[in-house]
Length: 440
Ligand SMILES: [Zn+2]
Image (cartoon, rainbow, N blue to C red; front, side):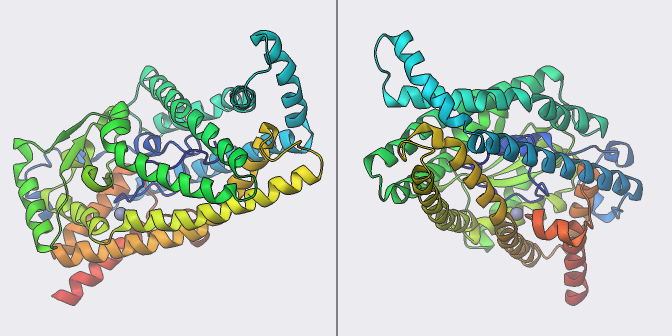
């Protein structure tokens, strides 16, 4: 909810889900898995993986583009509804004094059950459960609609209801396992240093994000997907990547494929991990539908994020944002205490106030972080074109993504400015075409 959990996937992916999945703020693996696509490609291109398909022009399916526009519009609406409900819910807790009343009721109740005054962190966990529990239940229908019904209706999802439910439960359990100690740690900083806690909290948050990004590929993502190194059957791809990496004077720890097809027909790729866990991951949906040349351009794009140190850079930007956000939270908590709504800054009843403020700040920062991301993504595209010198396969890879993932190629300007972490596919395809004509 509202970005309490750090984004442990620490992104850059080749395709980019154009806007946050309403059902999965904070759990971006579901963004990778659930959001995307459907393919008539199986019918149009029956045997793709033969390396000669690059010569067949891949054309944009106009009928699917209409569906893509429709799908994107519905998802944007759902995202906005979720956001409004989220704000309203927290607003009620903060504005109507529910937070203070509930917190006051918890202490005697917990003392009754435990037989003595509960430690502060027990009160905190109880309060958080009462605050976020009903929210999870209330938004379940919306999650079900946007995460299961809608992608099925658009022919994107390949997941059974059982599989979807299991993902939801795993996500919730993981959220609790990671979130609970973080919440206690967060309040510990306020208790430890009521004046300058925000410095500790922001520093700690950055550290946790870095640790999560490091362990994600080996500990967290395997909870949802099966990863395996590119094997014998993909030895040519592995060879091409080694050559690419060598020509770029860099190296990655490995290239893995994962079973996206168990959830979606969409294709995607990403650079994940930090340090020793850094790796490129390719969806099996990409491997099965794209030509060797096309996959090479996608890998080159991911390699660019590695060469440009984009994960470290976005971590640095996130850090500056964290300091500002936690500083403003400290100012707001002081103000709330002055307004006599809270007893102290470390009063758990301040939680909805903090969640509301952090959510609002993330929302305000979104156009800025997206603009930054689009800039880095555009650089990665330039790099991919320069290193591979394969503009036409690059363009056809982007076209395939539009068709297969039901992705809008030419969204409205305001949509791009506010919500897009990647340049729209149309401009990426045009860039490749310009590169092609400039090098002929
Ligand atoms: Zn990228």
